[in-house]
Image 1 (cartoon, rainbow over the protein chains, first blue to last red):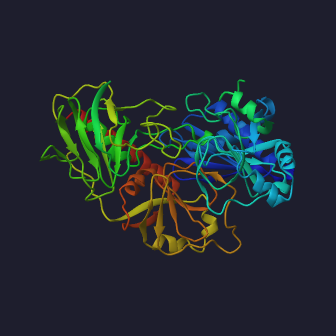
Image 2: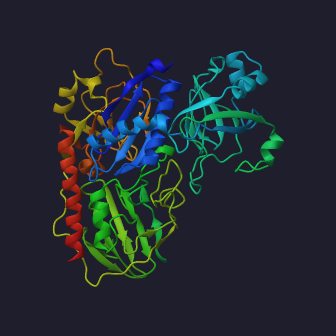
Length: 235
Length: 314
């Protein structure tokens, strides 16, 4: 799939203090891997005036202080960093296992998803906990992951009327997407389970245990295991 | 740390804000912070604080606060006809307050958001390097929420000034404003409609909060062949996104990622004007190059430095 990668990054001005750097078209693991490695490299190199590097599907956004640096300088440093890609070894993507109690009070929409997809309950759980999901982007809410890799057999439409409150840790499906709500919030996804882990903790550094490019696998647990597990994942 | 206020009535949307969380957008936490950097900075300087100390941001109208200990306060931003006990107090200058006083802050007559600073700053725990409230994420400020009746507010350590301070001028708030924009990041989606966007006037709707401001006015459609949405990408305060209905939305400080194309982005020195725009106000957009925008940015920083120097020597 390397064909999707641009030979050179493309730059887009994102206002007076940010620059978008694009590495390819569409949603593609190779493009996202390049985004992840370049974002990590820039975090390590810390060009003068850099305030944040925000990676997403096919681009990252550099937020900078225009009082200190400009885009000509930043572009130069990005292209220079790219030359070093072959010479540096960056941390490999991590695999994060997220325990999930499916169904029951934790997953009030599991039965609907089974009905809608025509699959037995245990098959829905099996298909949902089998893939290694890829984190393409983090945003929308603190720690919320945009995941790729949902089995197409599980695609289910959103609720017609969103719930006013979805509890933190809820695992849901919406069309071709799946994800976890790190915080309680309103939401329209079909909720099929819940993790006892606190995924987003502002008092922790870093506040989330994953970043863009990492893999996530959902591990089915029983209700007893859910009750016995602490928010930090220690039984 | 001392108790400074008891909240008698909170006002419709009053939160603790400082300059925001500047390096956590990559974990999905938006910058937050004061929407009007000019008014927030000046409020702090008037009471002898660093510019980025935590203040109260009040939308449309303000709270009623019982004063629990002596201190110095200032009110900036929208003129909310404040009074201490029965006595009206003027905005954009410092005032001494004493235990037992009652601070009434009314409704905005001009502008939309008022700022209240107190010597020592509003003291709440630092969360990810900031005291700013992010209500949707339930973090920062007072338990991640807006003020409510009965809250006790604390102030940090700070030395009261020997003399009162005032700004020798005050910013004028107009109900029609022109905002400078840098085209993009997806300006090429709108080649045929850019002229229409830049020559039209837009009205601020009531769908306006710290996340964004929806505008009413001439609809802007994408050029033929351009997709309805883009692959989600990081967004910035000031981005003007165009959803499929063609009605522009200016993004502010509570969003990190979005999937709509953005025709242009309001420059940093003009963001405070959006904070003071209220429903019904008129906005127009004027394009500048990135070089011009950076020049304006440097002038803006120098302007804030000048104000700091003026007030600190007054």
